[in-house]
Image (cartoon, rainbow, N blue to C red; front, top):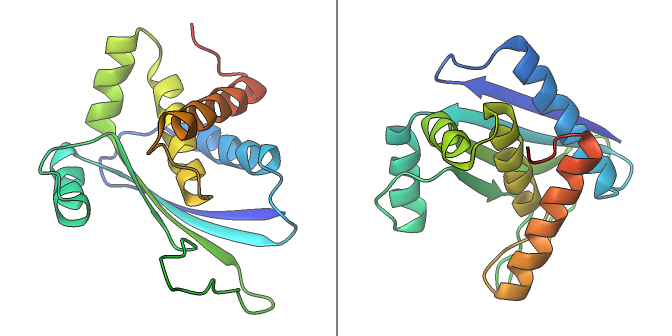
Length: 159
């Protein structure tokens, strides 16, 4: 399995070491989720609170900043049929957008590193791309347990 990650840091905040951590973490998450053989592609953008607030307002009807938003390209709506990628083309998973200011604030509030919070948000977004959700208490419990399992497998525990 191969994951192509198009990463754009609109805030010019992330270091090369943090970008490497993100790529390694997403590969670990894909292995942990046992993605089928093939090539997958996703985009990952790091933005300001203003940029994520605009997306949150336009696509979720919530006029406030949030920490992470995901747009799954493989999500099948009511009455829709799943689209299979053509042979030899990557399976496009979707987009993950992370607010760097929210990430920094939450890391401080929760008393852990920026990297730990960043990893948490990215795994959260990645799981949404794979179809996980947290609309019910059971779904939320399952998704958050999965996030912690992936972070622990990668070696990023709460501290």
